[in-house]
Length: 169
Length: 135
Image (cartoon, rainbow over all chains, first blue to last red; front, side, top):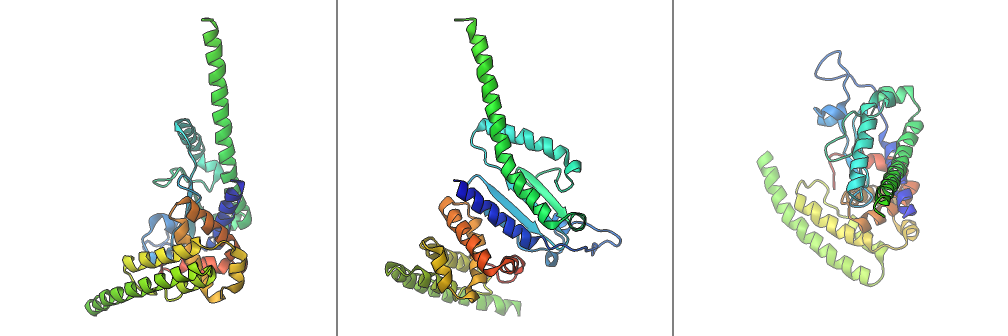
């Protein structure tokens, strides 16, 4: 189980290291504009093949690259309804504070839970290997966070139920 | 010009699919003889290069998938696989990873790690950048 997670993260790390070759590229259609090409997808010659890396049926990662930007979308494992709700709320909380993260996208791509958008400006300001470390660390921590949240919800529910039902004993 | 191109395509597609069926029979026999590396080599060579036809690509993918799942010893495989097959293998690995089927993904992730160690990041980048010859 742990090995498959390690392999999955290694694969994503290697793919990101190869794909994160971004350079400044002003917009071809509109002068004086500079847009992340991966978002617009207007010119096919500026885009690389998108790649989907699945760990299993529930978890996958979509990596789309272009000449000046890279978009990573993650789908997090959600085993039951409670995890579904927790994941949605938690990731929405993070996405709304996307300004603070800089590389986070405000809305996830259709079909995924959370998305990152890395542009050439980010690569110029920050170290490439640190950006990749951040993404991989994020993926590891998300699972832990969601399990912790789930456990605390269950514990609290149990405490409340015990207290409530004590009056009927 | 475009018309004749498509005509040639359709003709070729049938020929390619017959060739792929031929290949799959050969691969089955190789797998029965416990030669998974040979099977993989046969599957990878003669991959349809410029076909747009999805059927040819799917047919070839099924064959390659069979060969990939039969491999047990990944390190041993790399010692006997020629470097010229690394790029095409990487493309097929990404196709396998996009399927989402658990055993396929496990096997593809295992091979991907070893292949990256062997072939380096250039192999990954070539499979990402090649928009003309896709699998």
